[in-house]
Length: 189
Image 1 (cartoon, rainbow, N blue to C red):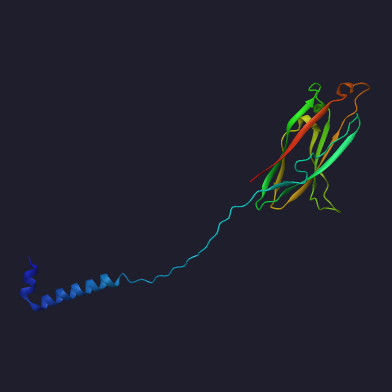
Image 2 (cartoon, rainbow, N blue to C red; image 1 turned 90 degrees about the vertical axis):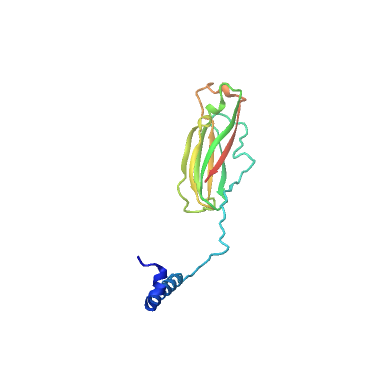
């Protein structure tokens, strides 16, 4: 076995070879850390959450108000619903706070209601055919899914309520009765 001391004392040539090897190893170890580097940054990246705003042209007012209805009469009203936000939304319509006076027989069970989507409120000519979303008694209407509204999209809805005419004297039990109902529009993203 050759010791480090014997290398240094034995021959100068071995000493030079050993020192040369150490020098090369040191240079390789130090030199191998040199790399090409490049960086890129994207400062001020901003992420903004969208908004969801549902507007109602008849906000805080009745879509339709009828005077005293008699059997065989009809009344209509319209309302424009708009997604005033920046993201699309699914819109639904539901009745709420239905009150019949007197409660029996309920006038809401007699009155016929039709809800139609008339399309864009700004349409004047060449408008699409109205789409009937609901046709039945006023009291039986559940939640209606109106579809997806793109940002800034609007639809006009027409409500038609009629008092169907029964046989002679069959409608006397509804005389003086009234029905109150609230319609709630909901947008969900």
